[in-house]
Image 1 (cartoon, rainbow, N blue to C red):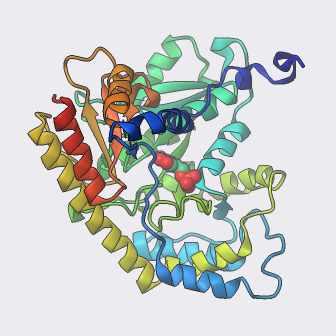
Image 2: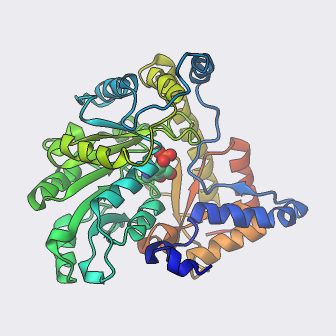
Image 3: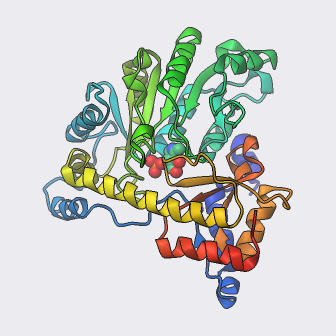
Length: 413
Ligand SMILES: Cc1ncc(COP(=O)(O)O)c(C=O)c1O
């Protein structure tokens, strides 16, 4: 069968998502690595390896026996789930949201962001006719695939040390127009703080400026807050865009239960904010699925505003602080410059050693010699070249083992 005739050009141009590619490659090398005492240690996926909160699992088991719980839900989410989300937004950020009109459930925030991109863009083949989404660079690699798959253009907003990770959005906007893209085709601007892959947060002043920019140019502000509960320094405590003036006029924000409660496989999240955008998004979503498994919604609704849930997040963050300290100490010993390390997420973003020409070359060498799976920075965008990302989500012992292997195998900065 000629699949080129079957699939559209955008899908034909896609490669397997980087994390799955790394998984496949690691599985291929596994036996060889074990034979030389270098069993793979994966620092690639942003997926906590701990068990979810016990209270959550216990409740889920009970709920499974309830009448009607195994039947279809609704795309926007059960009322108890949306009410709990509204309460969580109030408790955590002091933000008021109407559970009926301003909150919509998602099968993970990845699904929600992917579908949003599909809903707001029209695929075009002519480059300068394309709809434009302004995305951070480096960014969560999926944004680039979502936009590509939708036949649109992901226009990079560089996050660099030189611009203090605060790209000048007005300047970039002017550059987009200078490049020949059409003003009316600039659809949305993505921000993601705390950031994947850099692990940084930002200031309220910066985001306030971005809100004003989006209002002025009528561009949808899309905030991805998947890591908002992963912080271990009070002065870096992440905020919601809705704590800021005017955000609801122009913005929506995506949240995920995956990382804070270690339930990446359950697929739960929500989007909230501007009611018109949420309602229209909901019409699109209602053609795609029947919502999240009700038992998961019910158990998660309870954990969102519970003492057990908050304690679990607090303990998890203490663990990440400890794990980060192991890695920072280890990489310092290996000669890496470890200054201004942020205290959010579970990522470290580091430069490759000077004797390598590319991030890919370094990560391949580390995988083949030491069995440690890292992600080359350019997988997150062109500005990521020369860096690599690691997720310190595994056990303390495994993290120390990574440092020991680096020393033994000669990986110094
Ligand atoms: C920035 C960012 N947003 C969204 C997601 C998706 O999370 P989920 O689909 O599990 O909610 C991820 C996952 O790694 C992420 O890093």
